[in-house]
Image (tube, rainbow over all chains, first blue to last red; front, side, top):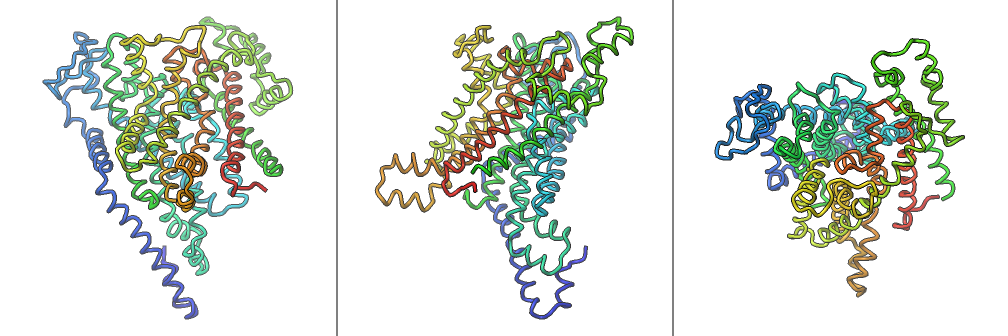
Length: 316
Length: 310
């Protein structure tokens, strides 16, 4: 897309030129300083450091599970079944966290199950952020009838209890793959981002640089994506990061209810729902995947909090 | 004020219809046939099936079914009957709602007192040890999924220490509901504490606070009246939307503690394709949600006199 503000300036009256500079310069400088400041703050925040290290490891496990275990998550030997004595001395060996109902290594399943949870969390967040942002931008920028209609549609989806709605959507699929779970969570999850984005856009819309860009004849798309989006993005990023943890937790909860991912997919949720069956005798089957889910959710919530603190000057 | 309420009530109508139709559509497009399910393995002859479907109104187009269902609710307070056992849905919900409302009320009281209490402690000591302790505690609560928290509490307090019964008895006394209420309200407690903390820490620096202190008002009044009243708006907003969420989100908690409430009905009607039960339940939850969000908006004006509804 050509830079309208610059190409338009020489053609216009000389009187307009200073306002172009005035409009463009503070916006760029402000944008840079907000994110620059945030990065400066983040690097010194212990929460940020801890959560980034955790997330780095989780992503590494998800990408290359073979680095952490050579045992197969699906090969079961009934000789071991239900054996749950943790052997802490042999960290990383096949049986150091015990075996599950089918005699499969709990540790191998933990490592190989990471990918499913991470993919669900990241994919749902990505879809929800894109869809929700676009809806929120349109709603907040155009206002009027469009806003009224889109806001009511958002209200409709927001009114359905999240877990209940996801349960109904999932129940309508007999083959519950990762894709289906992602769809179910994203189908009901986008409203939160839409509301946040709409609010942010309404605030940013009033800013002088947006009015200036409009006066210079910048197209709607350009105003929305070059001027409004970068300045309205901060709260959305915070909400999305925290929500990512929530989606991982939701996937585990749905699996616990027997409505999430199903075997043969290897995931923490699947192990959790199997572990519930053996809760009185072999708690370890439930315990370890639950701990992994909690750690992952914790990491993303901490990251979101750290980013919020860095981006919101009021909290400093 | 009157006009504002009227406008809000009018805005609720499309949302109410939209939400109920959406859930209606979702439930009725579920695969599986509850009528065929009545007849076991051998099945029935097509004429019987068709007659049964006609009797239940399941052969009509979905718009028509939705219209009939809604007019029955509004005109006759008739939520339909369950397909499997012919019980009226009002009766099923009437059995399930009281216990869940008790549970939700307890959970709400729990998150209100402890959430706001922890938030005040953290907000007043922002940046110090107590603040950090509350922050870490709430972070942990937020990251533990509900079912894990439920099982931890059940394992520790019921199986190891024996302080509580693992399952709630059929009498469903108030004291048996304390542990489930803590599990149900735990997550919201963390949110309430954090919202209160942020809001209070922010308002501590406000001009009116300095004025109040300078006037020589007792600390109690400065914090209890000036600071609290101004800091409660985000908290009240959250609490308002949470009432409905607690009732709808009780599926997991009720399952863990074997409480025969709304959660069990939700689960059962989803797996058995009891459309009318599920839609009726969601209808009630949506009404609760819409009414509380209106009440919350009106409460803003009480908390902050600068907000006026013309």
